[in-house]
Image (cartoon, rainbow, N blue to C red; front, side, top):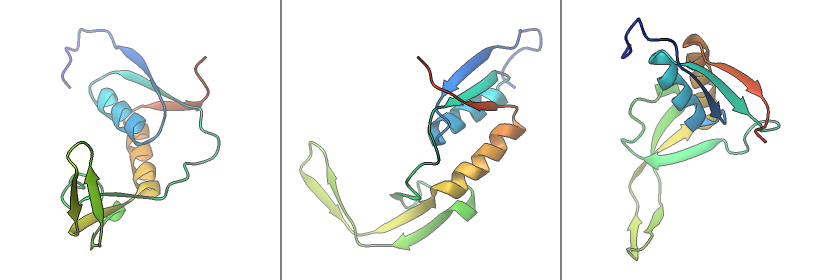
Length: 117
């Protein structure tokens, strides 16, 4: 841990239990923070797969990722360039969420449904 044992436990609330909220909660809990996730989503997220350039999936659980050679075009905003073709990593977002929820729970992160007014 990065904190001194004499320091009181800091507490925080993370709004949203999607991938960013889970990753934030895990990182803070591992540093000794008390973390509560609040997620107002009804039901589950609609997207199943994410796509990142090959190599960007390092550090993600292998069961969640699959490298593929797929045709694709990417338009870079403001640069008026188009990148075509190459290798992509398909990320199974539901498996990743499930894995990170387990990690968050093991790190002591609590979660509850709700909305912030």
